[in-house]
Amino acid sequence: EAQVTQNPRYLITVTGKKLTVTCSQNMNHEYMSWYRQDPGLGLRQIYYSMNVEVTDKGDVPEGYKVSRKEKRNFPLILESPSPNQTSLYFCASSPLGERGFSYNEQFFGPGTRLTVL
Amino acid sequence: DQQVKQNSPSLSVQEGRISILNCDYTNSMFDYFLWYKKYPAEGPTFLISISSIKDKNEDGRFTVFLNKSAKHLSLHIVPSQPGDSAVYFCAASGPLGGAQKLVFGQGTRLTINP
Image (cartoon, rainbow over all chains, first blue to last red; front, side, top):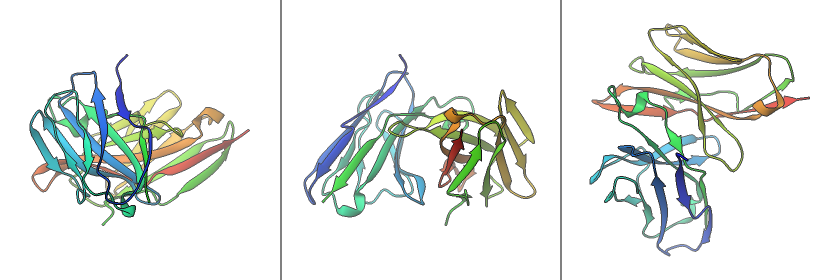
């Protein structure tokens, strides 16, 4: 089954304790991205990757890191989480296609609900 | 600066009637628009899209209308069914600032009442 998986699905942590949220896709997609969803703000892009070893900042990258060492995996790293990073996080992937990723359907993972105390 | 706006946070519609969800955008460089549907505890899933060269795209009960001069699009669901109750996100795509961008709106929670 074609899918994007995220782990963990739920996480409660404390300020300053490093954490990693994993994301994996089995569709051989070049493009992967992380979003956060907050009430009244919708989905905002954190980081994205066009391919292996190619990553770039989205609209709200502060406090986050990513890496893309393999095509299927795109982990999100919070080196020193703070309460303002409490949010619902989604990983997404898509093929690049002829016109580019944004003209293709994005496939989203099920989400990770993070609470930072 | 919200480039894609869904001004109605929520909408309640009777089963069998038409649901109309609205979305406005500010940048005329957007040339492709998508709607996603999200159920609780799941990720968004693609619903329907429209290119800026069209003004209407239909897929079963779902129709998206695009008014480029007004920078406005709408999603019509006819007839509405209880399973349509979800959060709907509008997204706009295009070349902005030399890079491809995909920008989402805030979402509208649609509730279909039996």
